[in-house]
Image 1 (cartoon, one colour):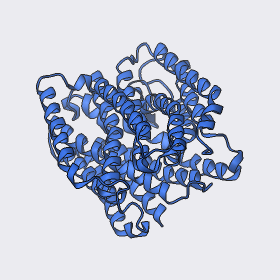
Image 2: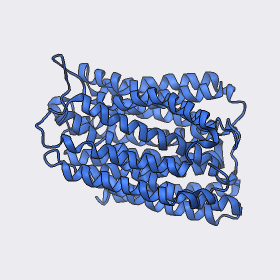
Image 3: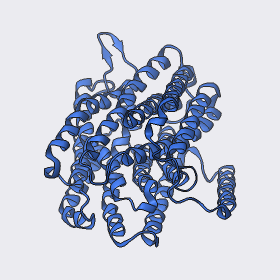
Length: 468
């Protein structure tokens, strides 16, 4: 029952998250007469990339609050409340005010929820339990049910009623998830009730003052024009790189981490890099692929043009169909399944192949690319995702030092933050009139990273100390 509850709350959170994100980019760059804000396409992709990066960057804060202040279970609850408030802000507040308030609330809330839901799922299984990867794959299927339905419904609401009704529907979805979690939270059996490394009372004021200083510094930088919409993605990339380096240094230098745990953290570094490469391509579903659906893909079905956001529901269909297959396959193979480094290598290289598959489609006219071609390419996206993402979530809980339990999950999400922010930065180089170099070079680089990871898989496994 614990897994079912977490499955449900994550499904509704993803419904609201992807439902909102499905219409966010076009809301930003559509003209005012189309109901949008009329921001330039490059600035809009920067905002979306930065927002996506901040969601996963916020998992660090969510992990820290869980490990040191509230525990995973309460942090998850309050994060869900904050997400709902953010979607309400997007639906009722006008213009950039609603965008700013709404995206900040959703980003912080989603970061807290994602890190702690994943951590609690990991706690449902013993470290050596062979059902662990299968459990995470089923949990991941719940994520993708929400990711499938969200853009379908919010896209229809946006087309029929307007953008703010689409955002309001996302708020309703998160409210349903919060109600379900509240009713069944007792089934978690006390998991995550208390912080694993409580913050001493004497340090709370010091950390509170530090947080206030950071907020004031951000306000000053925004007021001075140093931080603005068009460079948000690049700033998020820089912050994510700095945070990742700091996090690895803090964990590796901690006296609470023993020799075996330290070697496992070192093993995680090349996998972290591969994860960044994977997500920098995969998350372009919300940047380049949204533009592709709007301007390059033929969305006409028997005379009816389906909403742009619906393209984001194609990939989750593949994941939902294939997740049980992967879960059964890993369970049946047991110790004979590929090691985690090999799965990461295949997933990263697979994303490169997916980008290379766009090459034969380049050079055609506006809104001429067949839907079936995009559906086939997104199947490769899905297979690559199932090889890396749920396995990465499971791996983070297995390699985590005891003192950094939830924060190690946040470190995995930090790789997603960096990759997602990069997806926004890279999207600025996409030109629908000259696509070939873009898809070619990103595809080649991802395949090369997968090959390198395959070559060093054995020493990585040695450092993992028995964890597969």
